[in-house]
Amino acid sequence: MEKVLVHKGNAVFKVFDGEYSNEFRDYLKEKFVKIKLTKPKASRKPSSELYYVCLGYLA
Image 1 (cartoon, rainbow, N blue to C red):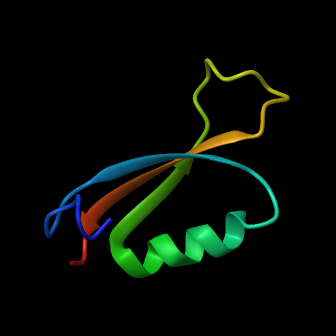
Image 2: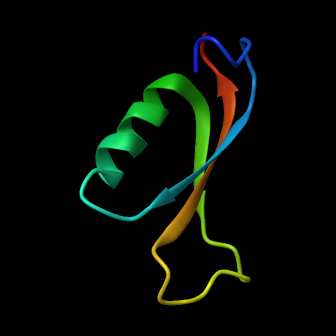
């Protein structure tokens, strides 16, 4: 992320719920001011896909 995002930049990450989901969330919490986990309505219910909307990168 350090090479792509600028200070206070925003990002969206598509992830699949699994073994390392909580570790990744904790990592994002250290790197961004605010993170929100969401699952779009268009996503199939059995799908494990989730999206992290991350605001305010702490470079």
